[in-house]
Length: 317
Image 1: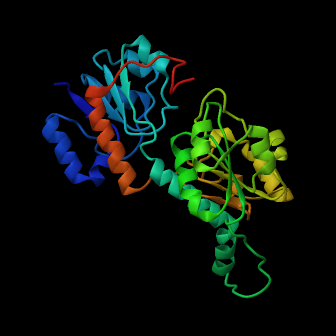
Image 2: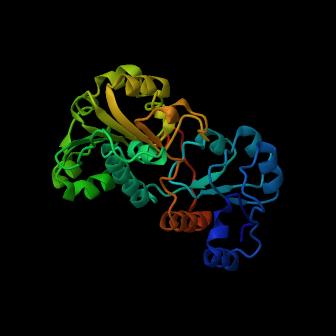
Image 3: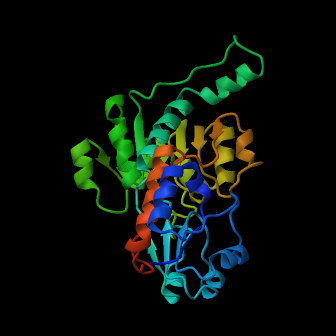
């Protein structure tokens, strides 16, 4: 039986699951606080352990080289963009992760953000907090009847499509892989990215972070979006040029934006947060009890299910 160390503190919120974990792996070590460990702290913490159940910790060359006994990392996350498969391969470390495990929570928040942004809830709430009630506040809009574009139709994008079915919207989707069968089943128009940008009243990003998507939403791309469109991003902050977005929100080219993710996190002090038609939240897409229990259970399962990953092979680019 491998010696297991856990770096994520979230098991403390699920005592029954933690007890199950300990019953299965009796000598498991858990963190005593909730800060993300530095390289040196990870090395000290994991020294002598063969398996690590992790969150968003970065297993750099320095960390992996200093831990020769470590042969498994099991991720309690749906994304793997913080992991370098080439480093793992050099050090014979296998990995486990479960794609789409938080898709329900993230897709539900996406629909929430669409309605929130369309109805201008953030702006109207700010007016109320400032002691006002009546006066010319302007109007929001309905989701029904809108054209909704989904950029990235993987696990989460497909779930968003399913949740949108009762809303009476026209749905467009764009992905670099073949999604034609899914689109036909759910009445979705399979379009190019350019058509998606030009036609969407509400555009939601569900792309993974990789070499082909980093910085994709440049100022030039934002200029291709429909006048007054809303942009939703619950994927990764590094996909959108935030300076260009701020300019287009302030100019009125874009009607609004709602982001759960930012290029630099924590995003405290990000200039976007001062823009009235921008709403931000602190990376809460998967922050539900249901998602976290599923991700933690997957992390435990992956101790024995981990396997080697190749650079350039899904989920890596």
